[in-house]
Image (cartoon, rainbow, N blue to C red; front, top):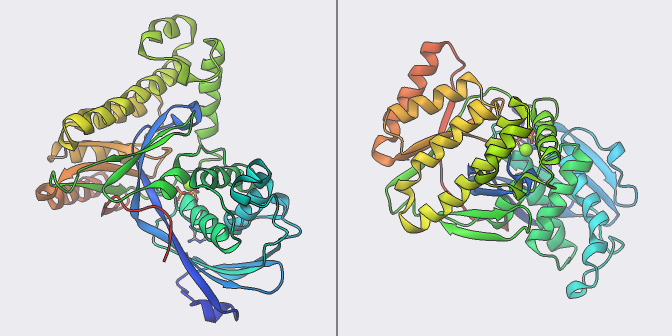
Length: 391
Ligand code: ADP
Ligand code: MG
């Protein structure tokens, strides 16, 4: 990452018309359930991507990021995923995906069916969401751009629609086969709350976390082990889930629950069975977490977080030794619960910790990593924050 941090006027000569911000997210629980039509419980965090936007009088989109030098350019009349590469695809892809998907909602609340009335923009991207740490810097940039384009181009569209635009862009313009969780969290999140999302119906409900009242905080341990969605095991895990669902005669693993596990074990090979068992039990843990938060409060969800980690480590096999060490050290030093979060193969772990134990847990994790000879992790607290908004 470069150290240059240009301001808008260093890069562009148009006048600023507004700034928008969208947060990254952590997933409290519900991992690899989204593309199985299941349940997830992410929260938007107080780390976000901010875009500063100037209006152009042509139909060009020009984008720059404090992340690296250089300006990328695309015409609104020639948006084509094939010609988008590098990080700018996360911005241009949103405009392209809007163009592709607007016809689905055309006419609702007077929404236009195309981008013929849209105008060009200069966009400077800044972010304090760490990249590749499992906190979805990708959704943060996508959602900041999506809300800005919708506002500026006067598109009367809903936030769930913008989430689907973000996912469509990430799948087809960026080329990462991700679900809709990240964009939903970034767009629908609320302070001290999580977003309970049914990835089949796309019904979303804001759930009070009550961390603050309970004296709890969410600690993130970024292992700095790099994950790679597209080239890592993600594609392979998706394929296992599809294979399992097909062998069990359902359209997705969402159609199964824990009562189906004995049959699944009979029908499937051992590895596919364990992949399927993770998804089925993880869906149940999300439902149990929501119920427990409502009935007993956040101090009672620790065992569910811990069980989720074990399932990802042993059944889904997406953890790495650094994540396991972060989790076990947090647990041994007073965390309510801990688990790896995000797609796996690196990235971050989360620990729900009493504020009084926070610093001790962070020190213990640092010491454990040093003793193991691992790269020093980055450890920080996140608070559940509001979703994307104009500043
Ligand atoms: P994450 O887990 O952080 O979402 P991804 O690989 O999905 O990791 O997305 C990270 C990519 O998103 C970066 O490699 C880059 O292409 C793009 N990105 C994220 N934040 C920025 C930014 N501030 N400026 C430019 N590109 C960004
Ligand atoms: Mg991402």
